[in-house]
Image (cartoon, rainbow, N blue to C red; front, side, top):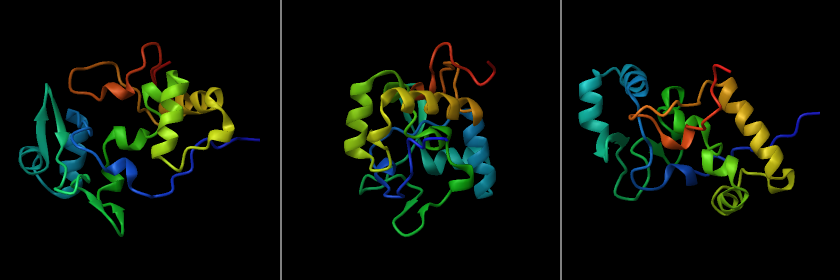
Length: 152
């Protein structure tokens, strides 16, 4: 029997916050193509530089520029990898306290499964969906888990 450690509630909490959605080169290309834009136009319209990375812009209310209160993610089929991976971020996978804090924010995380099972399923999910990152400068740090790659 498979235990599900996360059941998305479509609440939009993970779509709220300033400057955290990193978009790497392949993700920018995927999003631009989905929106029918050149990558240059996509970047000029929807991203901003934060440190050495490009991140999606946030609206004035703090939500991702692609969030809609009725339909949720308006670019869902092409959404960034960090969005595809939530809540299976490095911090939540390696640190039980971070996992516990994430539960306060995300009603879809099931605390009754325990951190060890959450981490096991999270790692498997990242590998299965090819969401692990190798530490390239333009990638989301939250998806870089040394020793864990989708090529293993």
